[in-house]
Image (cartoon, rainbow, N blue to C red; front, side):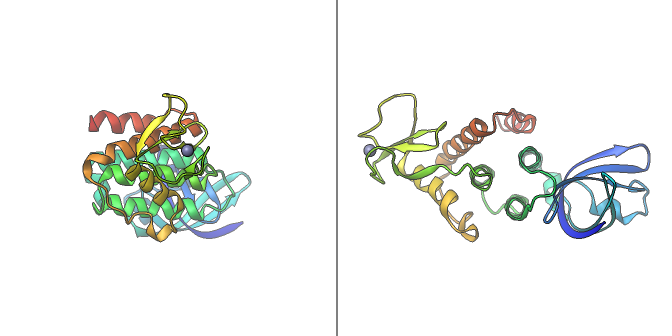
Length: 246
Ligand SMILES: [Zn+2]
């Protein structure tokens, strides 16, 4: 069975001297592992369009349980990611999150739209890296069904106090009058508003907010903690990103 779709290459492994196996986030078939035959030969144009972080039109062929990419045409290559180690490390972290979340044969439209936009903002330095990281982490959790309840205090319904307290495990907020334990994360109201913006806005608006640079590490810290608490997984790529940005 043949499918024509578009997809983003999230991983590539060489198989023997000529072939490779790629992991690709496709619009219509979810996360697919597929062989690219003869990809390593210099003249094969499938090679450049099935490299890491290439977004391409692909023709997929399924033979029994094995997918094969027999045609690929590049749409966007995100070249500048390859020349900046920090951006590349962040992109690899996004790829690892997607690989851990998306299954084969599910519609991956929303994941694809998010990661393509995040790579675009990253590659073109449209926003600080940490802001792109935070937006991607929080929004990906919402797509995966883990949207936190950030609208108001869980106990009294107050929407804004100067500091609100976030229960990461349950994904709920308390205002400063209702918080009953010092184990929760205190969040400045500006931070709460940024989190609400990322989680609740229409997709077209999620990248369009500005924060002072000094507040970005806190935002990125919270979205990361939230993601890790939901996915219960260690991401090697995140450890590497942290190592090089220390
Ligand atoms: Zn309250």
